[in-house]
Image (tube, rainbow, N blue to C red; front, side, top):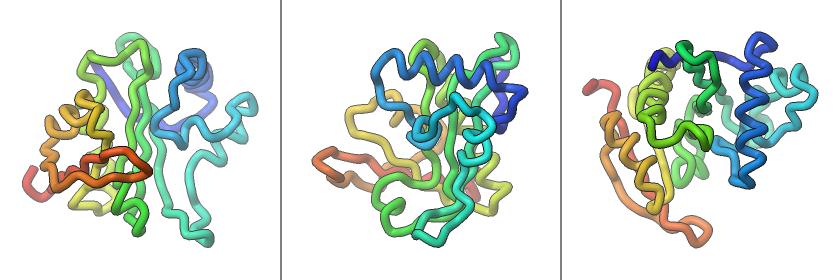
Length: 172
């Protein structure tokens, strides 16, 4: 499996739409939520508004990437990288949100995708990365731990137990 992170552009339109359609058809929440918050039927608008650039309302700038399986020529997931943490993201959200499309889970994609996202964090100068997942999401916790994540603590957020992992990129 040869994976790479790509930006949303018209070159990948059909592949991204295919993944989002699959996800929507399951009725599951799309993770990272930023890739599902906009209507992608106007794909140019979607691409131009996918990332946070205006921080005037307390939002944090971010970068969103889609994960392309180059061998099969399909988009298998996505990552959203927050460039720094505000108080809310420090508690719940962290630097990286990631998700694998439903039909591609349990294949090791999340572990590799997080590794690629950590490379992007290095480029942004982020040396200590926080990742958070629901305690019940064992697969997500394993993919974070496979990338050096160390569990710091567990916190309840909106009635859900969240696990908070730190990845020190200086030690990798």
